[in-house]
Length: 322
Image (cartoon, rainbow, N blue to C red; front, side):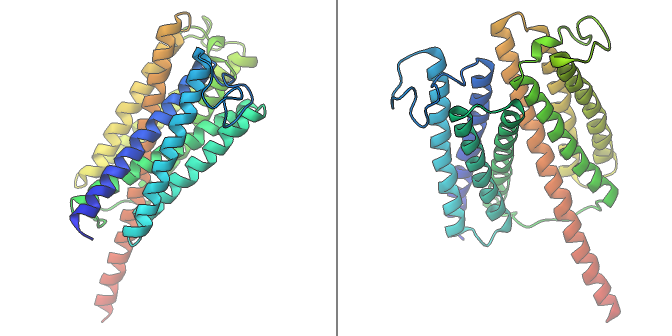
């Protein structure tokens, strides 16, 4: 495959990644501004019209639908391009397929949420699938960039212990759970039930009922997440000095997690200021996109290194046997 095809693949992957990021951010804007019902219960039309009458809520909701539609076409184009020109690259085929799958699922869930009233747990899951779609597009962008630079092969320059791999995978799973709880807080309008930070309603442990219990549970889960990521990052940095990629993933995960917690504190402190609250909430979403994507990529890389090392060790054993 020539360099021009790789270049197009990279640019298309970047466009999809940026588009998916806008979709996630726009979806958060819809929720935070209460614009989910801005188009009534009509889909794909908005209040029965292709171009709705101008209201803030209808335009926010309709722009979210429009952006999702455009990005969906880009995702489909990327998938077709990979099938046509890069299907021999397993990573590209996997990531483009996952991006398409999760984009379709989150779009269907979004449409059902408009036509039928959905429960907060289902709406939280809708955000979870959107995040998975973005993470898949992010990893597709990384491998497309690697292909263009001529370094598509998986290298195995350092030993990845099984304990560390399991730790990375556990961190990713726990992060997704914390994200889901955070989305549940948002979709149950529980943010204002736990005023102040780090105290909740002036108490270290408030009455755990209703929205207060949901918001407090998210805070505790986020604090534990920081501990988990700090431990994982410590081993990523100090036990893999010969693998800069793993070290950088650990460093970025810790930085993004710390920034995520700090933005959460800002969210809790600006509830009474609608403008600052909206900005802080969107920043909170941006940071969790970055954190989750880094952890997804790290999880895949430790798996790839494991497979490469097992193959190398197996080959060496066979050579000794001869």
